Length: 320
Image 1 (spheres, helix red, strand yellow):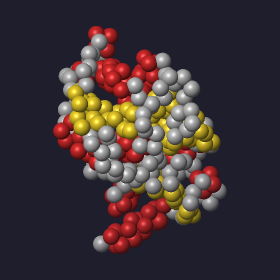
Image 2 (cartoon, one colour; image 1 turned 30 degrees about the vertical axis):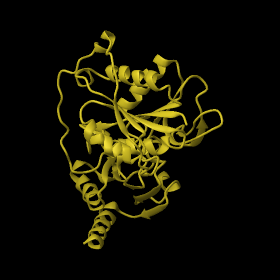
Image 3 (cartoon, rainbow, N blue to C red; image 1 turned 180 degrees about the vertical axis):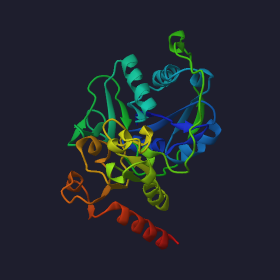
């Protein structure tokens, strides 16, 4: 069976959930070979093996941290040359998509971004995408070269499938051309204790109806009761109600959680493009004609300042 390269997204060896989803999808089309760059492979390897990696190609070099994405592309290209895979899978993060695009150019292959599903086909992997602001679902495949595919988080359920996961060192030569942009400083993101927005199984978002930053604690309290991430519509962000890093929509982040709760969000196409692939959608809005109600699974017509606190109390009482 052909091998499939899976780029590992991790923090010092702590493997992030989208990578485990990629390993699950990779097993549908071949044997997953994980590519781990940077420190922490001893921590990551058992987790990767537990989820189906037949082997782990590992490389660590200061250039991976000292420069922007180009050295990582050098390493992934070295893995590609060593394995001759049937496909290359990369998480659909901002960095992941840049790495995938640069790799596709280097190896002369087609690329598919933001896939939400993957299956084997007679002429190569077939990817499912949600396109044109999530108005259509398409199936596509790469017809030139080795498919390079980025997959959105929460697109597949993580499934364990123990494999050998033997660690092999990957020889990487970082080119001088890849050292054009040096990282001169980093500021750690302040932890909120909540899951990362694009990876969260539950997202609670607030919109214009929340009426400013002073009222967003209502949204945060509901999110915390559910163990959810907090999102915001563009209108709320534009009015200074919440940081842009939490914006969901066409000009923000795309999410696909198991449960999406929209409070005080009208449901303009810009917002829908970023959350329409959520598995279950619940909307709270006092306007019964709001467009958001056209795509929800459950809708509550009511004042969010009354509904959200009651919902939060009910969740807390059931958990308690």
